[in-house]
Image (cartoon, rainbow, N blue to C red; front, side):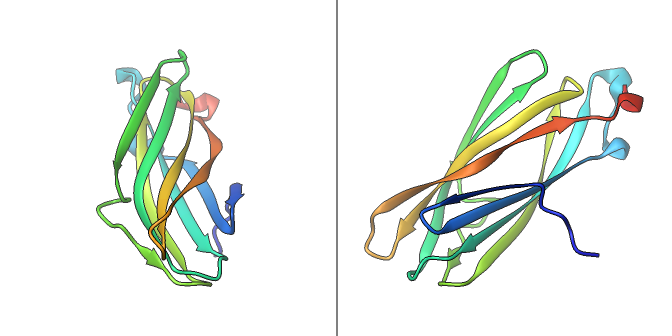
Length: 132
């Protein structure tokens, strides 16, 4: 079964696609904990090799509280993508509310050393009404 990417953004020839799913088995609404898993696919449509160096996430919960997460790479990797290549990874996000959102950007290093900021599309985190 092919996964459906619900959200996408393209910046200067690099496409970031996101699929997000609520995980009831990892959530405990009675304890104020909701959990989502998201699958990211990064596609290099440029004519040069690029390397993902850092990530910047803006995670907002249902109360409007913003958590900024900056770090190196993604899930412990700083992948290099040749022209036409893609990189997939899966991660998760816990929240203290049943609704919220995520968005951000990756910083890539181009072949010549210049940096390129690539947008991660905004995507909502929404638990089903039955989850709390």
